[in-house]
Image (cartoon, rainbow, N blue to C red):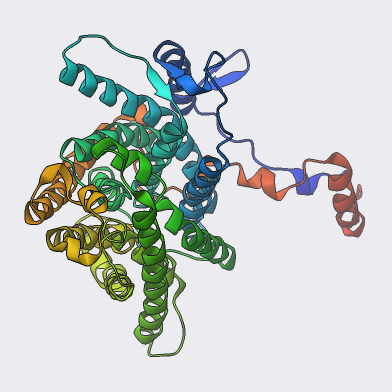
Length: 490
């Protein structure tokens, strides 16, 4: 029997099975086709349909101020989307990489696509209103960037209901369709003169509804829900990081596009009092929801230990519920009560209602139902109540009141519009989610026979566990070879 060389034994791994067609050494599959075609389309559309706002062109008259404040707002919105919502999606050791990695890919694509879609909807609206028939280019400015992040946030809210159960191609197609529908809902809010600048309804309620019903159409069977998925200390740490980032950035998210939204609805609005009320009330509401989430979590476990998954997503419910109402409240006690109710309902929904819905194939891996759906619905109702009660006696200046009660409507009529738009987001989210779920079940989107997807299915986790540096690999492999008894020839 001859001797066996064990030097590179630790480096031996099974070659991954190729998926797709090889061309010039490159394997082409559905995922690569979708990415390639989308980026080519974006390059063509941006080249032919967009230009920078006149103030940012090289031939602009005068000196354009360096807008540091707008850059800081954009920075906080980016942290909210890419870090906060991205890491919040980490709830299981089985799909940690794809939760963060797919969130990055989907959000960046949604940013590119949503700027174009909002511009197209805007140009169509303007052409219809002025009857000129001319089609102006899409002007790019800070509002374009900020609005795109609100749409991307809604896309990630929807993805959190699907994380761990869809392939990359499926998630990519879902993001494209959701961006299309969500930008339409955003423009409906402006068309109906509904005050939802901070996205309680068009981001959180619509995104959660879309994701849950897309899950119903996509996933016919699963073994994962919020209560039984395998967890690890690393996944929990990433989830808590996302929660901490959301707590810091949510107040900015709730006022980030107030100037754009109200600027489209009323002339010269006085934003400073409204922005400060919204910012302060968001902090108070989230603080209450975090406290109540910790309280209820320990109570659910006989007062012994906290359950991470019961805290990770419900703790942000306070930021969602106060988004459309924070402007109206003239005292923070209302925000504290709203946040406490949202935290309580969120934990209840995640622990009691989510397992029940899983039995009818509405699966929710990341607690979207408790963190976004119910708080968004409660926020829509509370915004209607607040709008119906808004009067100059609440210390609003006339221009501030005009910013909150739009188009000269009676406050009660404005409250009706707020409820109506919430129902539009709910119904539209159901129909759009079911339609998109049916589309991505096609083989073109790499649909799978099983609805659970682990990191190892779509990420090279084995290569990450083995050093690709030959020197380091040999250093670690040599002792093992020296200790192994060499087989000799008989």
